[in-house]
Length: 480
Ligand code: MN
Image 1 (cartoon, rainbow, N blue to C red):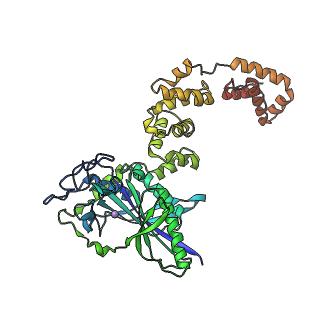
Image 2: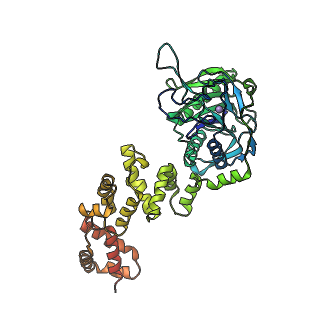
Image 3: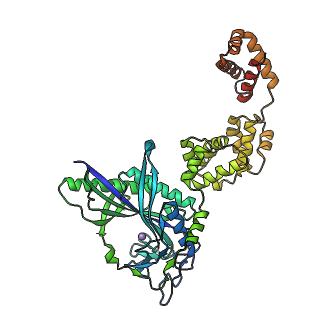
């Protein structure tokens, strides 16, 4: 029997805002515990929430970027449950009428295949604090800094059929929220987390199998591993004639297995009701169209533009748009006068190699983009060879980021001498030695130019600019 896996995801993205979603205090990752807490977060009697408008705007940005319908009227609801790191005893979330509904994201799979993943809803809610179990052997400690920070929860339809699709979706969401500048989406810091709903069914059947939810997966890799384990576990249970229990499980990263956490609650168990301390929210068309107009260029359209308008290969375009900061840097190099071809050669060549070797991000390097453009111009004008620029000039530019590349090239003897006379003399000698080849070239066998280029290259052994050699060969062969 062949089973088909079916997956849906709930992705929580922590919003990068100055203050929390229903309280006014800020939040810093890694700050001393319980420093960022107000009476609202601590649920003191009489403390009243208010809505952070920036969080609403961020929700709409993501909704528009994922082709969602944006609600014109929405409200917040209390989701009741007890957690030690959530003093209120409920979470402010959304039940009916979330801000965004019915969207989708198109994924590019391997071998040019596409897959559309439906997005059921994106709602805004608050995060809980953190329970810390590993600092003290006899007690659990609670840090409420994170309590009340804004989260967007993206709920997909059960449209995933392979683990590959899940990995690509999470990578795309992470890229998208970074381009939209609404979240750092750093899974290691917990500001993007994923719950996966997993079921299996006999291939060819339509009814969904009983689903199991695996909670709090904090890396794309662990999400993939947890899903793979869960698919195998469910298939082996069914093969042995057993049934799947609907439940919530956790993934144990050390043992690589999922384990039962609790029986799955249904929505009724949370007894949602509208938050009485907050006004319902009206979102006029003008607000939504203003946000639409302010959206930055998104990674997918940037990728398409790089291929169609700049003529870059899909492979290069993908590498250049993978990270927002890197792509912005590429744009800035072009804005400083460098053509797309040279800019991509520099960025995907020496710049990328340097970043990888030093484990750095482009924004921390401090090399102004105009310096890359200036170095590329030196190569284009034949003043410095690309190999010297890559191996010698670039490290100097990193060391002296504010010095002109031309100055650095001059003071380090990297400027190619004007060898036109020498090259011409050598070419004349070659033409005398090979009159047949010259005659055949002039009768139309143009590829013979390569023969002369090769001869000169060998003769000058990298001491002459290949571009100059090519120019001299063509000029002399075409001279009657
Ligand atoms: Mn949630």
